[in-house]
Image 1 (cartoon, rainbow, N blue to C red):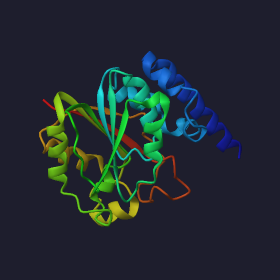
Image 2: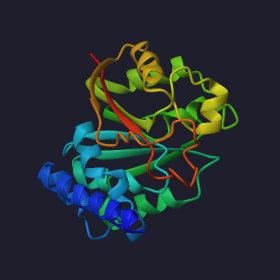
Image 3: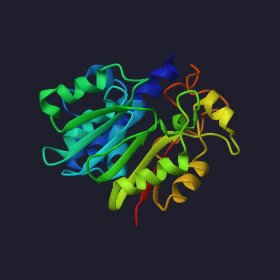
Image 4: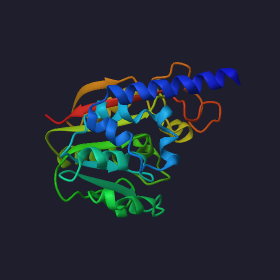
Length: 242
């Protein structure tokens, strides 16, 4: 119990340090007092300040967020881009429970709009500065959710970005050679596979973030295994459209 408490205290300290080191508009968004307690309670393990700062989200940006999942990042992204920016949330019919629409309806998040469609499909009204996927790229490889042509999907992302735009992906690390069946079982995907797939669409890898790298994670366990849930080894990848 003492080790768990010490670990939690250390994570909170690191989270606080990350907020202090992030750009002011990021720190302000993470510290927004209107964020639900259920969200802020996860900050110590999700490190939103590190994540948003690494992705390069800035005021005035137009951002497409795939699978908002209730708005954990949506609210913060909305605060960062501000009234001159916009967040286009892309949810699929199978997962939609109305929670994303509630975020868009909040008075302080009028720059958020949500579109609901078939799994892996989207249609943006304008080209965006950044396309954002956190912990869900691997889901696009899981056929039971919907069959997605990954080459076509990534090319669609490429075409939906402005020149110089960013494609940001954060996901759970898998062991080398993890097959599609294992991606479904573990909800993990190998970083090298993501890089291959995205670069094949014309993107250039511009950076890798290691803030969520956790050497103690057992990559053979599903991410929902109680022994590692919330503490998986995750990577951040930032690609740029030339």
